[in-house]
Amino acid sequence: MPMRKNQSRIFSFCSLLMSLLFAYSALVQLNDPDWYFWLPLYSSAFLVNLLKVGMPSKKRTLILVAQLTLVGGNLLFVKVVIEALISGGLSAFWSMDMRERVVREKVGSGLVVLFMLLHFKASTTTSTHLTKFAKRN
Image (cartoon, rainbow, N blue to C red; front, top):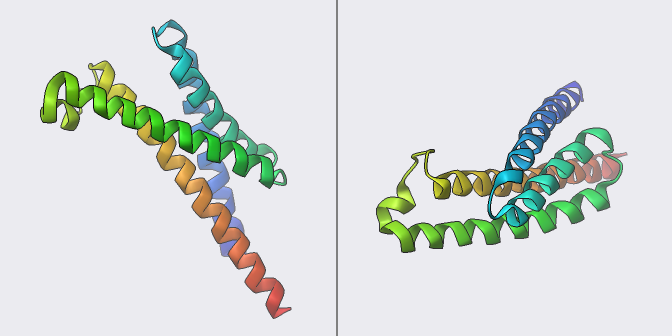
């Protein structure tokens, strides 16, 4: 059981760090021409990570916000990938030059999608372990 508690602390610490990253990302979107796409995405990713640390008992709210954030992140990722393919072809799609706006947006939306998937994995793993533990006792 100590291993599970240690993993939970590590995950909470990582969630706190990611909430800070997403809060910063949301703030720097204020001078972006298409801020209305990215500000809600990064703000909701910030909220999911903060809820995970601050209010883990609000699991239903956390899952709902994470689902909406995942859908939004996927839509924006597809938008950015199509934009990259149209503007520069396959080389722009594979580019990792962070000076390019499309690359930064691709990485940002990819990070949001990745961390929402990790939240889902962690929440299903935790509930599976709790169910197995309850059945044993």
